[in-house]
Length: 440
Image (cartoon, rainbow, N blue to C red; front, side, top):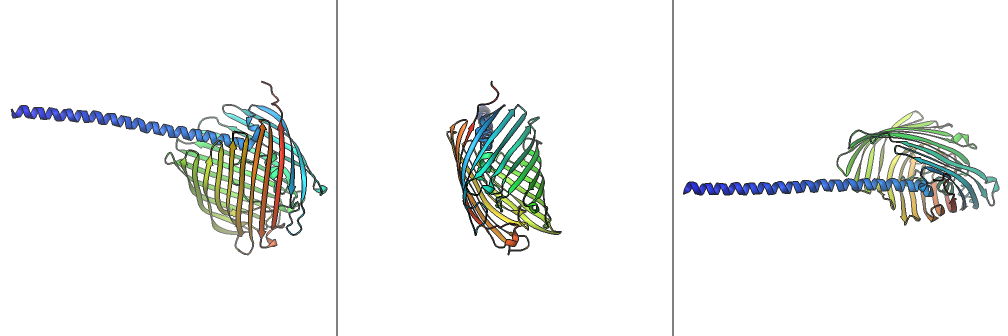
């Protein structure tokens, strides 16, 4: 009897264990499937967020021309602006209005692995009172992107501009819209003198694995002042970045950058070696927090010193709305100044699109700085301005821009021109794009 009883108990225990094992296996399989499904959803969300961000950048950069693909077209524009201080002299401000007329040629080619974009606008600015300031304006650029495989991307671009050195709401945003993705550095000298700028940049990005990539980049940016040759400068940068994604949301970055700027004046040159580490945390697929920092060694007039570079902020990139808030601390060598500056700045840029036709945005920057090695020569400033674009039709748009800048320099010896100013600029523009030149 005992043997039969123990046999029944043993059989029952074996049956319970077998059922438990089957249930556990089923739950594990279900849990594993749920985990895989969740990871796939997160990956799909990231890919969609990246696609929306790329489209938003393209829209902000090209405006009404973002819809022109594998084709070419012409456009004509006109804008009316008022500048409260056309000569950039805070003690004897004189305002004037001007009219800007410009035609534009745009061409774009997009293939599976190649993208090529050409954008050039040339115009003429007519002042109402101070006709001696009338001048031609040129702004254009060419971009080439080549992706031979899913791992590798090459990019080169060359951008050129020639227009008066002023706030440039009209020239900067009408002739060649900005990317809308980066907070611009401060410009500290606005004297309405003509200036030629060129920016050549390139990078190579290579994906070592699903989580690790490297990036090599470089720029060359000459600036020439026909009326002020002592301010001519050449800038060079070269950089290396290693990015590694530790988790689906957290990425780690190490970087090294070399910056060199040379001026054709007695103030010689500045070279900077900058190293740092940083991270990016994706709170959501379209919202991220970023920060980086590290030591930087600068050499100016034969004297070297070590400072600290830091950068951080938050960024949202979606197809309908983008914004960036950013803080930066670094050594800068701004054109027009007699000494490099240890500078700190807080900036933002925000853009919102409604139904793809009405876009409103704003940007701003507050910076405070002092000459290296001293706190006596300081330069502080505020730049802020809203903007609006209304697309009446896909090929017709109105723009309204306003910009305000206020700067205070504690010593005129700091600059080759007057650094202190308070200035307003408002601009109303209209642009009409002709149908694509190539018929389908």
